[in-house]
Image 1 (tube, one colour):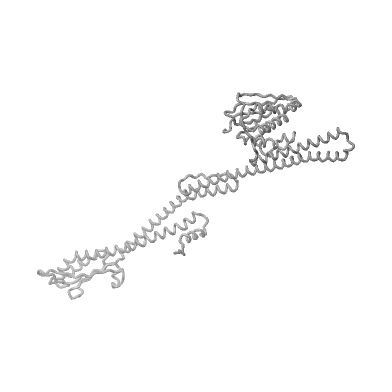
Image 2 (cartoon, one colour):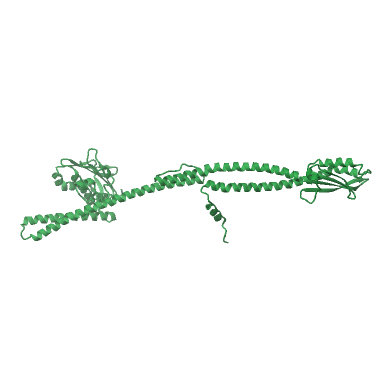
Length: 494
């Protein structure tokens, strides 16, 4: 069955639409009327029960009066004396009954219901006018009086006692008024206590939470809330602090990612500019010398013609090298480059490379030395690709090392692996570029200014070494220059 009147929704809507802007105001607006309503209900019930109790007490008093005075009155009514002769005794008895403040009138009737004697209280509220028993202000009771004649009880008359509940009502009113004062004082204490509890359990953490939110919005910095409890607010504050930390970390990550993306975009733009220059220069040479050769092929001597063809060939080889570098990088990134790995002695690779670069070393009057600090110079690698890496590292070392300086190739153990370090005495690497020197399309500021290049060589070297489950790193030497270290596994399962 569908509940059309959803109490929960109604109450939620009511509290949301209250024209009050603070939780404290809403708390007081709801709590105080509810307290007074509860207090009023309790007092009304209390007054009703007290009144009923007082009426019961009056009836009990009536019964007690009858029990007390019945024997004496029976003696008077059963005597042979006349009512006039017994007047003092009757009055004494009736005034004794009237000594109770709740009794307003007492009457004695004979057996024929004739009024024998009557007495009324001295209270001006009752003796100034006839008493109307039909009103609710009076309760009365009439009891037959019996006298013992021989062995039999014989009715000799009746006694009527009339009481008022005004005294009881006044007493109840006084007690109720005192209770109201005490209850209002209790409500005040409860409200003050509730406000204190509300302040230190709800207001304070909520104020701190809102302040932290405003500070975070205005300063864009982390402002954790200092409030540690195990209640709902403690959990809320802890969740808010965790959320702040997560947002701060995500913001930092996004900032780093943004900076990296901008740096990558800048690097890519530089690479494209350099690559365009590298491609355009040899193409211009090829096209230019080809046009000259076509125009003057009949008039040029063979030596000059050969020189032009040599320039065209060099430009073509340079273009081929650029294309091969791009293809190598593309294959390495796609994981499609094929490697023929085997256990190889690194001495053989280094000897072949040093023979190849001897003319370059001699041309710059450099000194190349190789040191072996290990007896086992075998490692597990692709001889061609590792040779490509070492050629690139040595080429850079030669390029950036001034004339007359030294270049060292140092081979050593690196735990259970083999380490090959290329150490030069060149210009070194800018400190801010050490962490990105192997990035794709990254070109050192010293390289771009001094020696040109595309920025692909070290990226290709890194991808080749990673494909061998090895590592490559760069650092600056304390005395100048840089050291590039390659670490290769000795076995296939390392």
